[in-house]
Length: 325
Image (cartoon, rainbow, N blue to C red; front, side, top):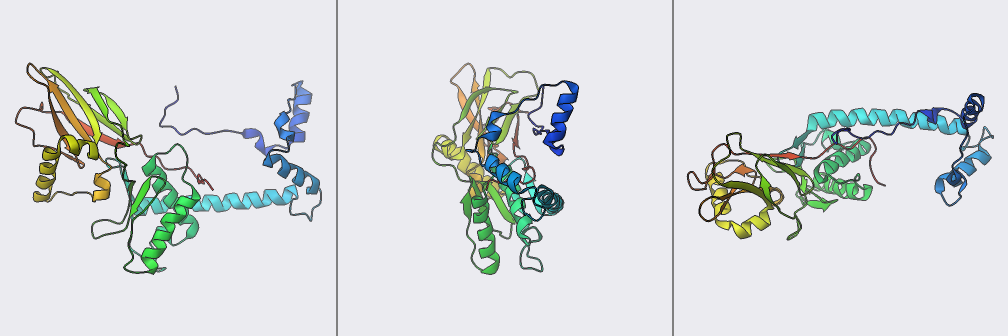
């Protein structure tokens, strides 16, 4: 069974062969040739281009000459491979992918050209932004060029007009300008009220995809605790309506302990995990993870010791040139 983690690859090994050569092979081997009727339908742009190239292709001086077009394609492929390598280096050197938060941080320090290394070249910048945006939003399609241009304009404004630092949101992603604590931070756009549906009454040892981008799992490696234990995942907005006190106390404890708290724009995108324990008396529910940190405010013994909560982003880097134009 193919794994969901392995990207699909379309293999078309016969594209390097001329149609006439393939036809002769089929004829020699007694293989019936099948012509797709849609290949002659002028309603499709690809067929209008084919007809144009076919009409001009025999003229060696024509820009539509097949040999000339192939040379151009080969040259473009070389440029594409060069950009791919450059993007890989810049991501390795300048990007931090936080799988627990589902965020991407890109280096902000300006280089000789007045921009970070990854943003100095327009083509490389576009691809790096595409990877960051696609990794965060986990959409089923690649980012649109118009959205990438919005992020690019924010970069231009920040480095060309000192003092202008505004967050920008597009494609379901928010780019937060650099601060003393982080570089360019890309996170999920703040959800609307009730936008993220809760996942409730889940069994220990199970996992769930929450918000279509984070895999949350809860396990208890010891023997099953007394009573029925289930768990649920909520957005911060939903959880604050139910457990405002415990989560507010949790935030204050984190501040007193000087533990890292993510920017507010990131906090509102993080899951709140709760444990529900139904024993002999009334069932009790306790939040055990919020704001990216374990909550330790439940009464002693209320939550079974050893419960483990894990969060992992679904984000995957976009493959080369996956930008919707």
